[in-house]
Length: 121
Image (cartoon, rainbow, N blue to C red):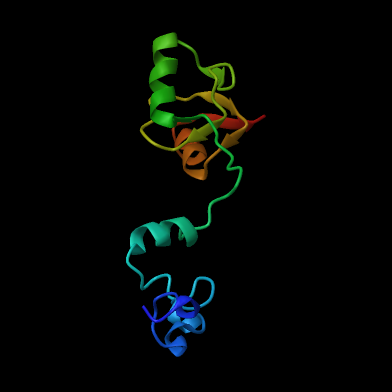
């Protein structure tokens, strides 16, 4: 050891400046040993995500058509079943009148082709 002033590092020039410790702040954070932990902790995710996304309870046209044929109804409000949005997946078996708050264009098209109608509400 060369004395207390150097804290065991030898010549004083070797222990000076931020270059000796790897830079200021996050400089070089992607080049260091624990790259995966540093990267996930500090850099965050890649894609934008809405802070409060709107999530709707959805039902497809095919499922709704099966339900209506089992129930023997030709007219229904999907809010009664606990759904908010009508999607266009599946096939429509009959002409139904469906009341939905939100519906996709494909759902409206399939129901109208089968002779039914979609009413917003």
